[in-house]
Image (cartoon, rainbow, N blue to C red; front, side, top):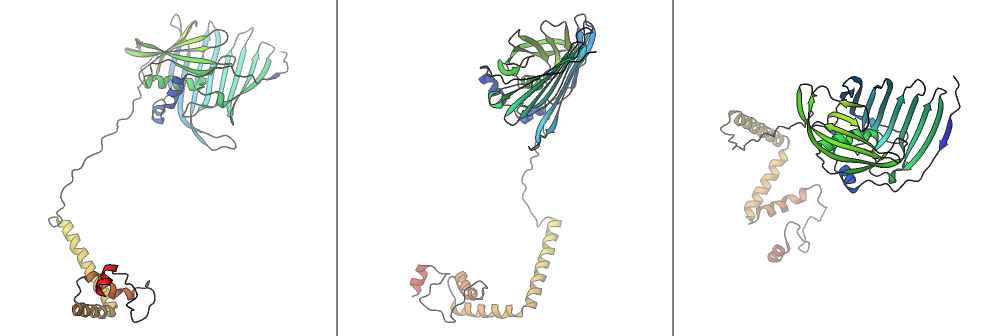
Length: 375
């Protein structure tokens, strides 16, 4: 088998005047961490032909993770893994996505692998998308044909021009959120088409309808997504259960569709038990045997501690005796100020002064009116 050398094409095309709608940007700004926590669940559906024959499967899982890039701090994000494998008209084909998505649904890194195995003309396409600084860098490797002709291309876009951009991995989360948040308005985000050209990806409401899932008949909510590429717009119709589980998906014009075969356990927000309310009751500690016993024990402990301190400091009794004699001789109206003046000189923080007080020196324990009246 002849192998040709790869051709490398570097492109930096100017973006067209494509913008997400104001409603789409406002929807992204309203997303809370608690909203995303309810979207973290795996699901598996079957791919069926028009005749109802199983021809493949479709799986999606979303779980919390951390993303670390060289030279940057570790970042909390979500790991999204989706795969679709099967056969269409006897031709094996499939798609797989592995991506890291921020809580704001921004794409940190995404690996997209698509393949079609036809005997005469096979196709293998790998697309890598990664945020680097203030740019989103996209590289593609396409291998096709029996001669394994390989083409490699790369391009970059400024993140400032990608406000409202939704990658294929983010799309899986955005639709779960649209269902849970009961969004009824049409939203226009930015996306890339199959050739990685920037375009509009619109989401519109399809209303609700009944659907049979296993032995149950349930109400499902529909969302139509259309990618307006430069060639032909591609449209998908999705129907979801009330918690965001995918019930069915079909691409308009495709001979196969995806359907949920068994009813899953619905994810619902956890209801927090109300905090107990305790009525305030009067505390009669004297009637409480335990509290009264603790009070007596503490009282005896303090008395013993005080007696011990006084026995170790006999000068305390002399000082108190002098104070009481001086207090009874003077009989002041303001006992607190009198005590402050008496014990003030004994303070370790008091400034040194003459032994005899001068009448011109103001007393810190009396206000001006008191000193004027005394003089």
